[in-house]
Image (cartoon, rainbow, N blue to C red; front, side, top):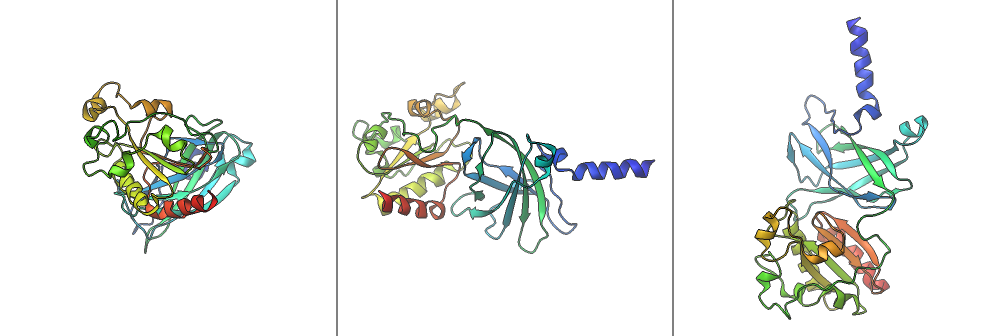
Amino acid sequence: MDIIKRLALIISCLTFLSACGTTTASPTAASPTVQATLAASTLVVGANRLPIGLVVDGTPINEPGAKVLLRFFYLDGTDAEKSKVAGESAATYFGQGLPVAVYVTYPNFPRAGAWGVEVEATLPNQAPSISRLRLEVLASDPTPALGSPAIDVETPTAKTNPDLSTLTSDLQPNPALYQQSVDEALKSGKPTAILFATPGFCKTATCGPSVNVISGLQKTYGERMNFIHVEVYQYPFGESAMANPPRLAPAMGAWRLQSEPWLFLVGADGLIQYKYEGGITVEELTPVVEDMLKRS
């Protein structure tokens, strides 16, 4: 009887639905324990950027050689749909300059509801590990959606606040990121990159690197495109970050943002073409920026 119970338990654990909502791994004896984590707070019907982090024995990693494959299942569907692979895609490594890597894919979810994703991660010279995550896909986007008009809002600039320490918590700011208000940039007839981030008080440790990425892109493409950094908190930043609740900058409220960092790439027509939650890299953004400039 004990053998039958154990066999039933093993079969149960291998069933995809019983694993959804948790993150599990199935390494070989010689392999480290690899778990996948979701590095995004919002997924919606339609096009998405889905960043996945990898944790090895409790520590997030930045491994360029990791191979990550995702398989998607629609858990709110019929019994057949729950077990049928609805889509499969390989994730691309983007960890250059970040404290930990994200492995990114760009799924298009056709329906709202609960989705499962099976993450197969293979580290160099190791056997594959399988993790399973449960995703909640929303019917509508609580943040400014792709294809929607960028929100016209006034943000502080160096023109009215020459002391950059009142505009950003970045200790070595690029002054070019604080010359235009968001509303001014949206009327300029140029594409615009708007980064909401707080280098000094970031909860994810990716704000500073993300500001550095935007600063570098500004130096390359600044004649043809606007680049703006918006601080997440009101000045004084430390007091606002520690307040309960935290005092967010007015632009954060106008853009309906509750996490950081967020990057929005807006076309010359004022419509949001791309959006990124979490850490960003030059490698991921450069092809996108160049494509936007060709089309503008």
